[in-house]
Every structure is written in structure tokens, then in C-alpha cells.
Image 1 (cartoon, rainbow, N blue to C red):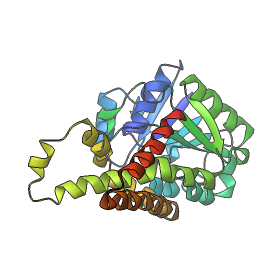
Image 2 (cartoon, one colour):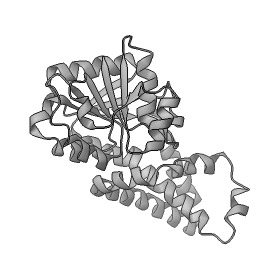
Image 3 (cartoon, rainbow, N blue to C red):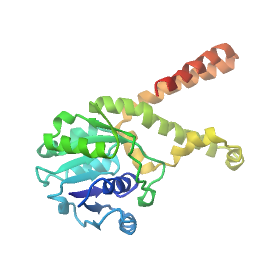
Length: 276
């Protein structure tokens, strides 16, 4: 099987490591606009070689797009030359704009997916072989993908040990705003609220596990997350509005010294972990 991976950072690099363990007779060819990433990917053995042009992927079995969501939209429009048997899988964290922008001539080639995994690190050196194992992958609008492409995608991610869920692209984007996109916005906000203090280093010296857990994802790539917030703007704004309402309610209870209501409010939040 010939596999092209466009984007050789955390997601693309980890996919390369994972798929090598599951398939024999495999050629992995990488492509990345970042020259340093291509060099690192070759040195780390993530890819067998690097493509100079997208046209080199013409007859490949599989092409994975592990790049920021705006780049996915732009790149997928350049892949209209692929074979009818080629499967294109995108790893975008938003889905509606991506599926809407897929050229009709290759719509059956494309499987719109979102692997619900990752870390705050990026670049080829951040690749982890088991990044995908045990995690959820969402396939969106799978009925619009070709039979061959859908079958390959299911088999592939099942082999990687992922749990497969199916959603409408719009539904996915609404849910992702609450469980992924808004938490990143909050983490960036938390980090900046500390950085804006007179002596942030003194505050950080007191930081325990709670602060570190909540601020960890503030180290995520601004380029990637700027694209995500832009593509899923309305849903992210709605999620932030919902969060702000709860934070305002918490603030009001503390101001009024209504400790019983505050306790009940926190107890309600505890129940989230009953369904996780």
C-alpha cells in the first residue's frame, strides 16, 4: 500500500508510526511546506521519502491530510487528479466547511474524519506511536464517501484500535465547540490572565496540578487554533457564551456569599464524570 501523508507534525507523524506497525509492504511518502519538518521526518524514519509535488500522489492508495483546517480546504481542491480508487482522509478538527468545499469530482474519494486525540506538542519529534490507540475517531457524512473509501477507512482505524462514531458534519462542529474548541479558548485565556499580572513568575511558582492541567493546552499551535476558531466561529461563540453564563452565576453566588447554592452548583458539575 502506498500512503501519502501531507503534514508531518504530531498527527501525521504519529499516524505514520502507527500504520507501520499494522501493515506490511508499505511505502509512506511525506509532504510538508516546512523544510525542517521534512528533514526531521526522514531522520526519524517516519517516512520513506518526501514528495516534491502533490502530483506524485496521483495513484496512491491513501492520502492523509494532517494539516491545519484552512490548509485542508486549500489542499483538497488541488487533489482532483487522484485515481478513483484513492482514499483521501482529512484529520481536521472542524468538518462542515471542509466537506462543503470538497470538489464534487472527488467527493467519493474523501472520508471526512476527526481523530479525537492529540497533545499540546507539535512537529515530527512529537510523534507518538500509540497516539490513536483507544481514542475516538468521528466520520462525518460517511454516506457521501465511496463504498471502497469508507471500507478502507473503517478497516484502517479499527486496526489502529480506535472507536468509530458517525455524525453529521454540522452536528460534529457544534459538539466539538464544547468539548474541544472552547476549552482551548479558555486555556489561552487563563494563561493570558496570569501573564498580564505584574509578577507572573511569582504566581507560577505556586502553580499546582490544577493550574498546570488547565493551562497545558495553551501551548498549542496558534496557527492551527486560529484556523479552527475561524472555521467554527458561530459554534465557538455559542459555547463561550454558555460558559460565561455559568462563570457569571458562580461569581454572583460568591459575591452574595450564598455558599449552599454554590455547593449545589459544584455538586451538579461533579455529575459530569458519571457519564464520561
